[in-house]
Length: 305
Image 1 (spheres, rainbow, N blue to C red):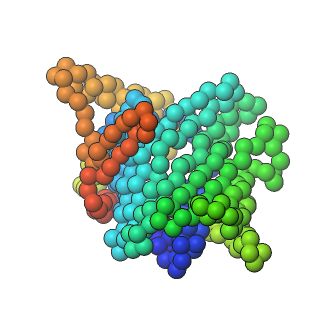
Image 2: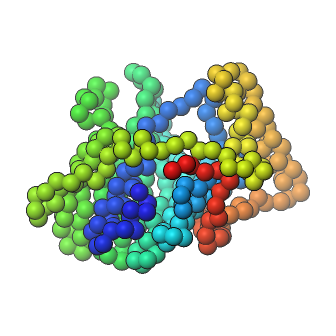
């Protein structure tokens, strides 16, 4: 879907494709008995087709993750630096994903900047999760914007409103609405052309997600010690075998190792520095991460096409 963003013949088509890709990143979230807790410097280096992705946990307190992805054939680049800031509301927790995602279509000289919705975790009357809040996508070069809202359902939600989104695509200068967006992010999202009145399906979750395959390790010898598949290997094996006590023990081992590394750095006055990103922080702009490498090389983990 990222490649599709580059194939649009007009700025309108490319923005519509970016909106569809943004919607595709919304997935149902499930939590296990022993959830993972990314450690400082943890990485995930994976490739799918011509797209190579590299993620690094660049801060632990607060938790901040950085992502860089490139496709040299399509000339598309993706960067994302985000911090999770939880807000407690009694019977629920809302995890605010602070930070901007940037999709660069280098062949067209366009950069699309967007935020992410928040994740609401409900405990009562029954456990559940949902994406909530507004998403805004801006392209300064074309003067076009899009926004959509992930609607929150009440405790007595009706099926028709569950996981629904509603939004529009418009001109930045005049605020003139060009297209209306409506649907459900886990099903079908449709777009209405205001001028012609025609409807078009821009996203079909079943089609997109059903084509995804599980990742496989191409060559274990290429895995860095910081790779998630290495750091959490024992925890994952215990979860798959449903041995929750051993999973908790393995998780404690990982976390204690990190505490020991922190104590050692503190004893010699050494500061930890990310390997793949330059990180900055300010009260005005929050956290920002710039990739050190211009291109991401192929990863040791692949997603089969």
